[in-house]
Length: 374
Ligand SMILES: [Zn+2]
Ligand SMILES: [Zn+2]
Image (cartoon, rainbow, N blue to C red; front, side):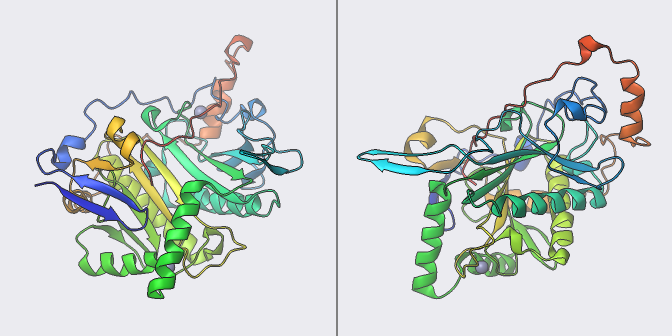
């Protein structure tokens, strides 16, 4: 018989249907996309093409060849200039579309992904996430910051060069607000943070845990809304990513890399979305707890989910977690991009043969929608 589980953190229901349940191997991508080249001379995010993007807002290291850089999105969903206004007239509520939108270029390598970067490279990426998150939150017009990554076409990306996006919104989106309200209700009733309680439960039972470090727990939730839906919870209660310590940041880079490598090698590099859920640094709240969600796009959402807001998950969280736990990531070296002496050197070599006709700026427009709740 199918089982309906409630996800207390998201407030959503999921139907786990054993008759439809598939084995973990059934979700392994059968026809992986053709590997991209290490360098694409027409790509606006490849080294040597920095002039194709708006002037960078941040780079690391600050001098010399960049490892990670963040640039304003040429096709920003909001205007970075202008004064914020909000008004309500009868049934019409509106606000100025001001805010911030940057693209974080996670590596100079066109063919890499977070899963195949070194731990030091992932540390630089995570440190950039924190720098931009903090900078966005300090803009007085910004009320909520959304940091996300679309990996692969079915996850909504239009450019294959590894990148994330960050958007500073002048209001708090309804999904985040409802969850914060639910978390406050739980805190008021039980005197504890719901996410802290979930952490304790999941760590104790361990059947859905994929990986654990001193500071983080990576697991598939009891009521996972989609197959291999992963959460990475910081163990220390903190309502904002902006409150992460330097030590936690290093730990996060380690856990993130391990989990993404398990997904990459275990499921054969599926498309996925990767999302930060965090309050603002100005709100240090006892009921709110920041975390990351990774949502592999291995099934599709359809009419039933759109109408009901309920999900049908054809996989069992416990079985999926055991599958990922057993993926031996260090054994898998084949299939990774071959090391280059330097992506920048390669770019410079390639640029020497670039003609003007090749110098085409591609669209940086990207879908910011998600197939599943996170
Ligand atoms: Zn590129
Ligand atoms: Zn907590």
